[in-house]
Length: 466
Image 1: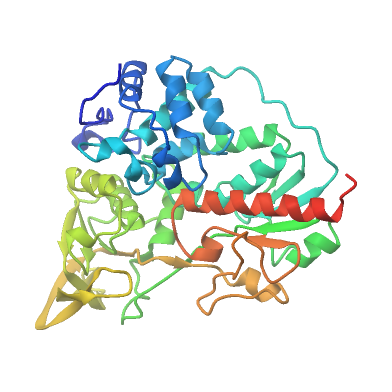
Image 2 (image 1 turned 90 degrees about the vertical axis):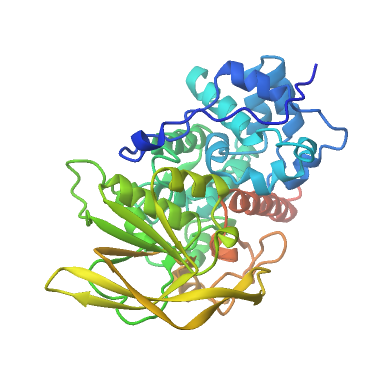
């Protein structure tokens, strides 16, 4: 019998005042009892509306049905047939604006906790799986993947399952892309990311780190010298944006990209870490997205007495996930909304930064559909802080563009592709943030999945006798 309770089962979590002082995972995950109860809320709708909201088309009702039967490993295998990163997606995918958005149970209550159930079965599999997965039989064709973020890993996994000899090239010293350098340990433990990557390696995927494509090798050299028949570019969007206001080059001003890389990838939060980072008493973060929440919550855990988020719109327009905003508020992060910095002034005598801000009000909607923030005349004021973190978004690194002859890009740097991910260069595909600019993990995965299918068709069309 279906469970008609209107609310989804809450996610067990660390208490706010405890977690604000450690980097352990905040959400603790469903127990078997909670997972079984939540799975009973699924109505197994005839038309599967939830699936249309999933960029990688996970067969959601089928995996939930397996949970109801107590077949947790079977539920995992349903997900794994379409997703290379179940344990990651169950933690960081914005289900509320995708699969759960279309859940029928959400009409008169809360939708089924699809993401929480995905995390549960992925964690169950990781805890109980015995032995390495068998590598698929090779089909004799080689492909390269540039970047080991969610787009690249998904593309690599899908092609490996089809028998391709796949090599992933990662510029940094650790694989995972934004999953490793961008998302904090308390939201996505790095051991889980590495476990997912190890699963791909067990299928035969080779991962080469410290390989900056565009410097060590060009995309063209991958094809002409290394013998790859197609290349997927999933190099992400790691170039930070700034406001271009006076003072952004002052000591104590970080981009969120640098700050989070030092914390997450280089483990600056560990007591004996060799990575230098400023342990400031008062931190101010500029921005309102998930990256701003991550930076603010990391700063708090590094020992800041106060952390303030400055954002030019209101709470309703915050682009960050609702859950992340709520967690930040519970932990004591201060939100100074409808305010915007106009200048940063250094005070070397006191080793502080004075942030001059102006108050804002909301005007007519802009191109994004959100009401445009408008400055209120004569409303400037000053904030004193020790450290400023600019979390204003990112754009694609221009290295691939500048070293790949004939590669068409947008004015802002994104690689231009068709709907299947094909670029202006034959045999070269792209997807994820390198194409769209900074977006979500699951959208990048969807792009990698689509490109993998197109690469397979392209190579097979050139070898019809295979």
